[in-house]
Image 1 (spheres, rainbow, N blue to C red):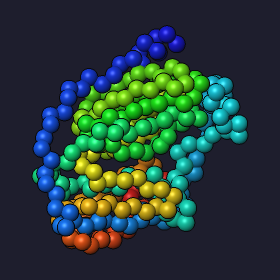
Image 2: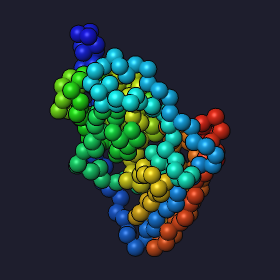
Image 3: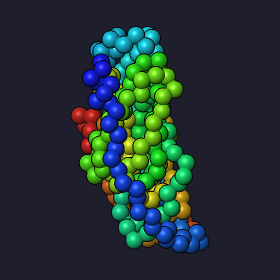
Length: 247
C-alpha cells in the first residue's frame, strides 16, 4: 500500500498554456445545433463488480451489489453521450473559464462519469469517500498523471493542455471506477442527460462536423450547417449491435 501511495503522487508535468487573444464573436451571426442521441435495439446491460467486497466502504455504499458498463437509454434516448463540434472552429480562439470543473469520487464511482472541460481549464478531483482512491489519467496528447486522494475531503486539481476526446481516468485501487474527460479548445460541447437531448448555442454561422462519443457505443460524426439566428436540428443514431458502433 505504501508503494501504491507513493506511485500515486505523480502529477501532470504541464507548462502554462500560451495566452492567445480571443476571436471577437458577433452574437447576431450565431445559431444553434440541437437534437437527440438515440439508440435502436436493446441497450447493453451492466456487468457485476466481483471485487466490490474487498473494500468495506465500497461494499457498504452498494449493499445490493454494483453493476457497471450499462448504457442508460430509456425509450431509446441515450444518456452520457458527449456531443461537440469536432471540426470547423480551427481559426477561432476562445477565452478559458476561470472556474474549475469538478469530478467527485463518491460511492466508489466517479461522478459524473463523462465530463467536458476546456483545454487549460482547471479540472478538480474530490474524494467524498472514507477510503483511499487515486486518480490515474492517461491522455495521449498531454502528459499522464497519477495521484492519490487518501482521505475524505481530499482534492487536487490538474490542467490538461491539449484537446482530446476522450481522456480516460481510472482509480487503480478500485479498477471498476472509470471516468472519461472530453477536452476542448472551444465552448461548444455538452453531455446528454436521461432525455438524450443536446443543444449547442451561440455557434458561429458556418459548416461543421458534429462529433458524438459514448463510453460504450463509441463514436459518430455528421456534417451540419449553422445559419445565423437559426437552430439546426440533428438526430444522432446508434445501433445496439454487440454493445457498440454508431452511425
